[in-house]
Amino acid sequence: MTQKLRGYSLALGLLLSVLSLALPMLYPVAGILLWGFALASFSLLARRSLIQSMVLISIGLAGLAYSLFEGAAAPFFQLINSNTNLLAMLAAVSFLSLIATPSKQSKKRQPPAGRKGLISTLASGHFFSAIINMSALLIIADKLSARRQVDTRTASLLTVNFAVCALWSPFFAAMAYTLSLVPNMDMLTVMSVGAPMGLISLAMLYWLHQEPEVKLTGYPLKGRSLVLPALLAVSVIITHEIWPMLAITQIIAISAPVLVIVVLLYEGRANQLHLHICNRLANMHNEMMLFLAAGVFAIGLGALFKVMPPWLPFSHYEAVEACLTLGFCLLVARLGIHSIMIMAVIAPLLLTLEPDPNLLAMTFLSAWGLGSAINPVSGTLLAMQGNYNIKGSHIARANSLPIALLYGINCAGFFVYSALA
Image (cartoon, rainbow, N blue to C red):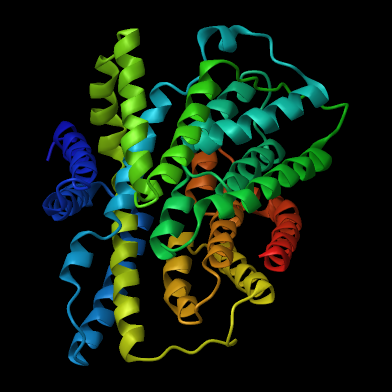
């Protein structure tokens, strides 16, 4: 399958997943298209993604086979639509990079330096990244590299600042995946706890990195680059309040491309849609395969635990257990295990305890965000390694102290939430 055809097959899968809200019979067709995209890109998968995906699928199918042997029903529909809504949302959010990039005037503007530059970099980097994810991290790093070398310390600042977006951003894959694992969570409640922790995290990073003698050039973002994505975030929240039966992933999958298409048509840049589909969407094979495999893994374990009761070191799930779980997730992430694999393993186990879904969701978001900053082979650190020749293991080591402090902040947030809930 050509790159152009792969890109349009993914775009069609996104469209059908949206249309399935009105025509449910289209939903499995969307799932088939996504699986077709992933399988057609099999030879293009990075070696690590290939190994992780094969391990996840193998264990998931083994668990499913055992459950079938024990008399359980075969969840064929679930397998076809393994994380379809999540993947449709990821594809939809990628379109935001077409309109949420800095303007020409912003690029030419003299950036602030010193402490103002640090504040500017933290604030703009955090909120810009919260909307368009990894693209923002690389855009800001490229801007900084024009005036100074992106060393390990700078990479640590940028990656931790990026990671804490996972605590609250509805546009992060972390939120979408958590919604798929804990569907009865209340996203606004989780965001209301995660957002203050994100702000506290920014203050902590400023405290760790403020050095007057270091002339860090900042990255100001003004105008449409933040206004339009902010409007999208507000529209998603309002739409969810008006039509709570629509999942957040579905709302984002609809609203993000619509907003982008309207803006591009107004500006006469409709041709960029074709380029985005043929380039960005066509090259999403690693994340697509990994999320599909994680879905098979979770379905297989879920079926297995229905016929073989799991064992846990605790019998209920409250703030203390959330802290212990997060600590375990971070230790495993430091060893190089992807957050998707960690969450897929422990979610079916913890759900048997009937925990507060919001507390469990907060645990997963923290595990994803903080874990990505200390996992030497996470997508975040590998992107920095590939672009700036800094070993992921070195960045992970430099991130150990801020992540340890953030672990304490998150644990405090768990206790505050539990006390007020």
